[in-house]
Amino acid sequence: MAILTIIENEPILPAAWNAPAAVRRAASTPRRFAALAMLVAMFLLAISTPNAQADSITLRPFVHAEGSKPLVLAQVAEIVGPEAAKLAAVEVGTVSAGGSIQIADVRAVLEKCGLANMGRIRLAGAACEVRGALPAAAAVPSPAPTAASKAAGETVRTHVPARLAEFLGVRVEALRLTFEPADAALLDTALANATLSIQPTGSGDRVPLAVRLYDRDRIVASGSVRVGVLVRREALIAKSPIARGASISEDLFTREERWLPPSIEPATDATVGLVARSRIGGGEIIARSDIESPVIVKRGELVTVDCISGGFMVRSTARAMEQGREGQVIAFQSPMSKNTFRARMSKPGQAVMVLGGSDPAAETGN
Image (cartoon, rainbow, N blue to C red; front, side, top):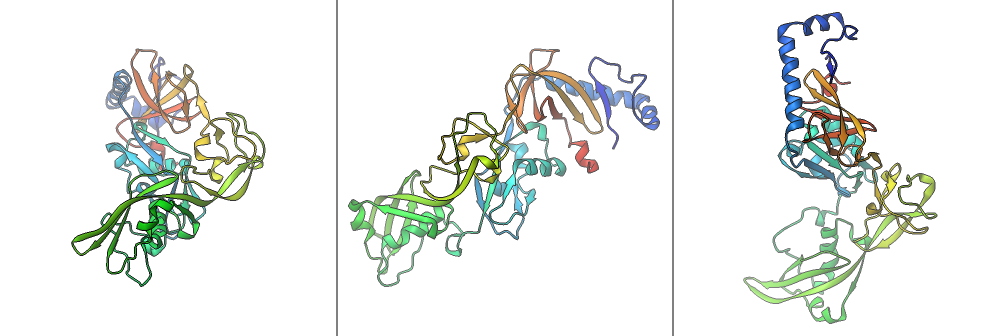
């Protein structure tokens, strides 16, 4: 598909316009001029309309899945807003355990599918780590009370690890638990013929659990316990101090298995190429919260904005009203007005805004 380009403050059809003769002739017809005028009007309307809250797609830190099955966006990301919701069922890739879904790959797939206006959607997160499927017993979460087996000798304590593994999305063997002596009476209650319900009521390094035992339609025991939790994870350890804003590379860290509280989510190999959000000390774990995508535009900088609709593009220059990272949708101000509009940062000095359709490059497979 040919793209007709209009550069703001230049003639619509300059004498030296570099386009095929057939396209130039088509553009010279009254119908083409009408279409071009409409696109310009749409662009001016977009940049003169007060800014609205953008939809968002934020990659989750990790997902449990079988490596042979394709992952859809709803599995790997938190989706907010009606425009972003159109993309929930889009397949974003098939990745085996230990791999990850990168934000750049997700963006490319979503742009190509053409189901939503990506100029109105903010993408966030660096990568979603793919972990192996949960054990069969914990694979299907149940909002109703969990019916535990009544094998002889079983107690409340023996069922806590499986319930916490399900809640935290890890395997039972990757958990190390500590219990309060004051909770021993409830934890050591024999199940006998009772039905056991264990429901986490909060999160943190000491997870609160609500425990109830039912004998048919009667509650025979109930109470709350707190369980200290450590999870065995592979972590990236800084070899030496890493300054704030420094780019993360392979030579800056080593890999170790550590027992970590749930509040610490270690970074993965997808960290490479990102930057440190704050100083990371030598020997410290590099957590997901310690890293972020590099800033590619600062507040006040001028950026070229391509406004695309079907086979037409209006190119303009606008001022960034906030700093932005690759893939972020941020606010810009047009020199023609004081109102703001939003466009997605594509690379340093370049942003894209899509009006009423998909990216033409995606439609042509380029």
